Image (cartoon, rainbow, N blue to C red):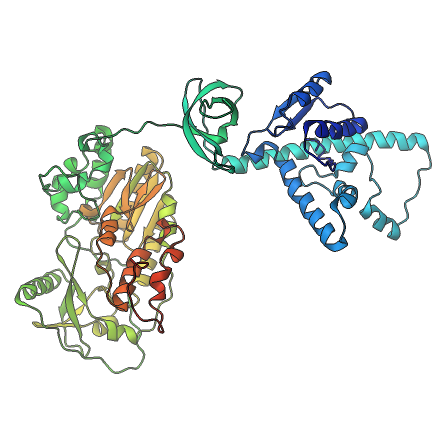
Length: 620
């Protein structure tokens, strides 16, 4: 195939020896002349002494493409697929040998306009439309008039050929630039010097149709920006010319890395500085998802210089000044926004009255303490409502309790709010390769949204000590996530470099100056919305943070080690209900398991109604 005109030629051969290839090449040269350059793959027939001698006699330069790198001659490889499809269709429909139809199929292919050049190969080679199958059909509809003047025809022919060549050059160059831009978007730029150690994509010795990275191999010489001469002494061919895309740097593994040598960005500095003491047994610092600060904002502000000790002095000073200039965001008690109110639509149903749950004396103290906290801070008030929902304490990861109301019966009659929540994977992917990541957590986020009068009456809760009603949005209501996400989208929805999922806000950027600008803009928005931030659970200007149950940063996403450990230590499910819980747990990290549905198929089969629950070795 001609590289410029995309003119293809194909010859049927009985064998693929060098002599057969040379004979076919002579047929091509006999029609179109001797080319200056020939590019081929690294087949033995093209690498033979006979082929090299022929090219030397004809003064033809020989370029060989890199193995396992089809982009070296992409147009030809793509035409191979097209020609094979045409030959297959010809043999099936005509019930004939492919050699009989090869010349006709090539004639049809050569008159098709190429997208990259804007012309058909025939037009660029011959300067006019060759009478092929399409031309025959066109002549039946429109009779072509013969030229009246030979001189005018010749002059017009030359002009058409020159114009077509110039247009084809510009369009081909534009198409190649466009393809290169698309490819380079995800390409990594590598430059190797002589003596560098690299990993190379080479054929598997026992299976030449497969390839994998092996090494290390030594770079002998840099032939061009794309091609390198690589030493392969352990193989039959002691050296190879490889494209840079088939190479990647070789890094020596460093064993026995001490914890003290780890970069500070990987240590949970925020936790240790807040007063948490280590185990003292020399073990690595636990995952930050398990050790999150629970101090008051005022206490964290007093030690903010220590908390941000992982930053440089100038960066730490600038960030502290920003925090202190927005000190009203870091109160110890959650504030209440004025941008939105939560309502509960239940129609004309009768009020639902329920009794409180019995609790042991120890939990009773925690329950009463939570109620007193809410009463003192205006989160709840004594009530005379005809509605009542019981309350319970849910253990949290830091061994404390979260006060929750059981709104299951209220939720069953509540009209749903279909406002969408963002996809977690989209929020995580937005961070990408950002160098600075800050995670902002709101202080009891739901409690910063007020309730309407109707919602206050319907959300009334009962404890052993009395009946109360919420003044703010409680945890557990059916439409609470939709309302809170609507609020957060109003506050930070249009900020650049900012992602929000409920009360978890992430700010990310590639430079320190832009990061400070985005943090300032976010703090201004939060202040205008009268929201309060939980400083103890925030991370500022980190390289990696724990966000939505994942370790994200530096272009990588990893599962949280504590959650992986919980999955590994999960006891064997003994009932279908326990199995459903386990599948829900592991399904959260399904993106990290290739062919997840196939892997868990033995477990999901046990959930079928007509299958008896038997835990087999396959399930284990």
